[in-house]
Image (cartoon, rainbow, N blue to C red; front, side, top):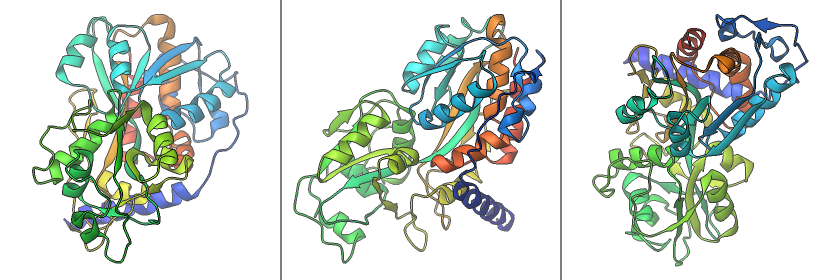
Length: 378
């Protein structure tokens, strides 16, 4: 336990340093540097200027998680500056859409906020000739409970109360359950305007994983990428939810920290059972991610997260966004470009760059495994 706590503390300190540093250095064109088809791009250099472009560059189509949208925007711009022959078109659309398009063979890789289910892996074999889809954890972050409540600057919630709000069991902001968690805060006697995702979403999956684990039965449904709560209003994507919370008074919703920061939204602290409520920060998410374990087999690197953590300074509603790719059977005309791009975004420089966008750079122990898996894609 002491060793685990030391490890969590070290990672949290590292995350603070990375998040504090806006190391978004401009990428110089370096088209003379190429990666061989054996995937040397998996060990991309630490400087964006040294990105190893594919020996056979080609456009890449991708879609899926909106949680990783800001990270992907940054990465594809930086990579495209170095490797002008590889245009990365990431369409977003939500994790469910991305996985579906991938298993149908329409895109080179998908972004997903949840690990593949057995049915998804089985379906992927039609697109991955001689292989199957694998999970490559590439972006770590957290789900913020964002709010816009008249006269309220700070808000604390816990698992049971959050579940009841999103399931329409608590409908007024001055409900005794909310008031008990927020002594000294004047809560308005107004209706709660709760917003959830309308699309299948890994963000929803991670939030409902937390609710199912910590609500003491208040959230009756199992964790799911589709919204199962009663009542409330819906919006498409993290951008849609953010826009609603920003414009609708006395509202509450859930988005990734990056979207909360971009839209200047307030995030609730979470009472977990630790000595004090835990703020929604990258460093506090890193404490939780430090204790994640790889549960995938073979080249699959799916992670198990502890949504019920009670550790000090451990924010519980964390997420890991995966890139979904074929371990074998990728299309020959885009394989080199795929390995080059995925190798770059797994690199230290790419991970550090998104630290300034509200994400948590992937722990080195995980990113090292990702780099090795990318280099072995076939």
